[in-house]
Length: 202
Image (cartoon, rainbow, N blue to C red):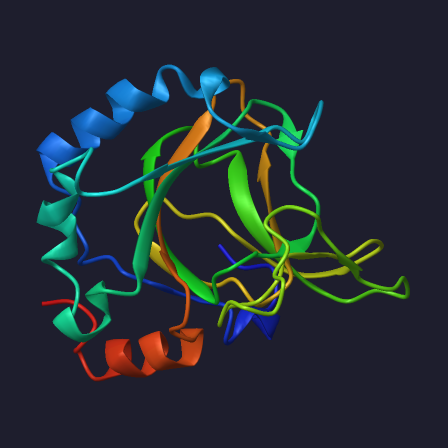
């Protein structure tokens, strides 16, 4: 469901991307201890992120093999858990331009991603993984007083333009867990073009 048409260039669906069962089971098992992961945000904005590689989750190779070989080297994996009742600040992501998010567990009827335009307040560069100018990817930026332009509920994978101002709200009573494939240098527009040409997935 989309509240407005202003989410064009913000996301697209990837209904044909099916996570292998062995990988999903592994992520569910790992996510049971999400409260022990690195935390970002405080009460009512609880986001937990755990980065992983194929070395410590070999099952990730099953998913990697479903993505075009030309962009595999740019993918960074992490598992994200958002606590019940949490609403993240409107932001752009640090150190990645785009991401493929795969829902794992959660109530996706009452948790969703929102997209915004900048409000009247000035943007604030975040301290979380602040870009020091040596990396090819963007710094994270928070946007106080943003203007909501669209809301997306999804229970199948989607590709997100993480350079667009967005947040995630989990208004359910259970945690919301996604596996995120972040692209440090590949722009959303490139992934969108590949998708339109049926070249993003193999």
